[in-house]
Length: 118
Image (cartoon, rainbow, N blue to C red):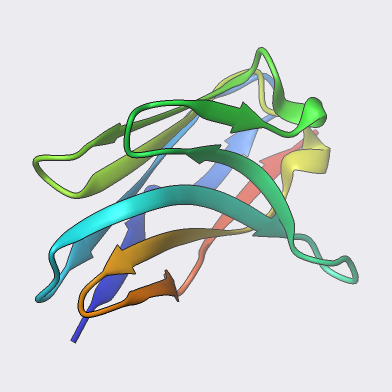
């Protein structure tokens, strides 16, 4: 059974920082691409940042220069460092990973709430 577990959400004032973490556990060969998505109330889920196994990154325009995604392939973990947070960053943040077992499947974490107060 493969699981993704997120941690690190919370309440922060505008201009503050938070660090989200995601850990993959279970029985699998490897973790391919990983990413963070977010969903605000009444809005569609959107990509925040993604990272390949080789370390290539991609960011939504709205977070470029403020957020940094990283991963540790040996530990099957991924982090999202969020700086200069804005109220519009308020959302539930989800971890997604493509996990390689006998095939490649996408898994999602349970989500972690990030609330930025003005």
